[in-house]
Length: 120
Image 1 (cartoon, rainbow, N blue to C red):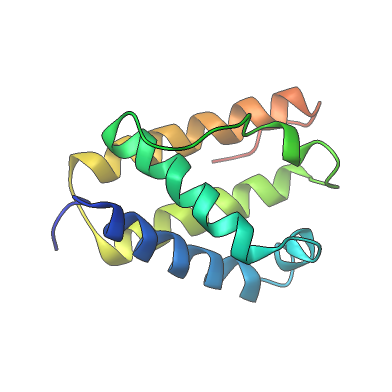
Image 2: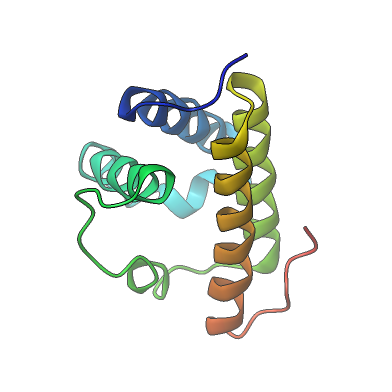
């Protein structure tokens, strides 16, 4: 397997990742009101920026999560699914970078939402 090296790789990652989240009976309801056609380009831009710097993402990633009924278990599922999807598709330093950023996001978001730290 190779490392993530292009925006197309990020798109491949996000497509499989969200397919898996939407198949998860605990995670899927969180996305019930989400317009995935609008959401996917934003998350692809977000992770592309993290992977390669710069990028086209504009916005505050935390804010859309505030009105959701998120629990610590959602962050565990999100993180484990993200890392598992990465591991199924790629390996290398960019993968490690994305995993570390995902862990940080899970902890920061859960803290800001007043939740217990996820066990990840």
